[in-house]
Image (tube, rainbow, N blue to C red; front, side, top):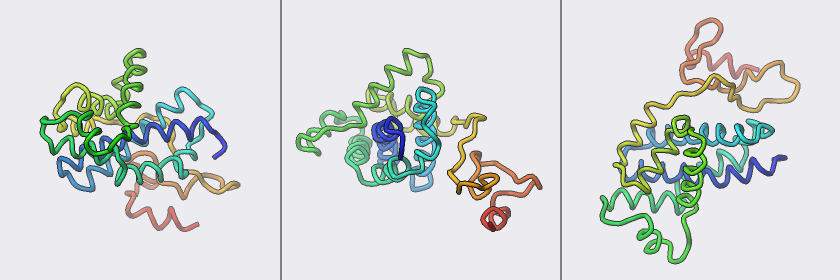
Length: 202
């Protein structure tokens, strides 16, 4: 990618989302729930970065430094593993204790970044715009029940701004891209499923 800031901050924020994925797996909520956490996490990453660095384009989040790195970390990274163990410990061990036991001297980037993000959002009064980030912080540092994250996922709403996938240069519109809302409809009122053949016909 061309924008260094976007790539670097994606690399930090994905570790926070990976904590959420680990909490989900610790509760044995299944792949659909974890997929929802990754989707919301990616949107909160985009929202946080672009609100501060508007020159970062949506394409950055669909590059290797964005969604690809997020998926890899959320399925097998150290942040995911420790967060999953934290839930399974049922309050008997802290994140710091599990970090020391499981990582043998390595550090959790997710918890460090989560603290920094919390300070920024609290200072700016924006916690409500980042329900997933906020709930992950409360679980990791304030002892909130991990199940509270599910309520945060359920309350999440995409804003009205576009979040479109990159498309080929010269196309009149990103018709091949999946639309930003889960409940989108084509101009003819078709559902996403019935519309897929038309969307990918070009």
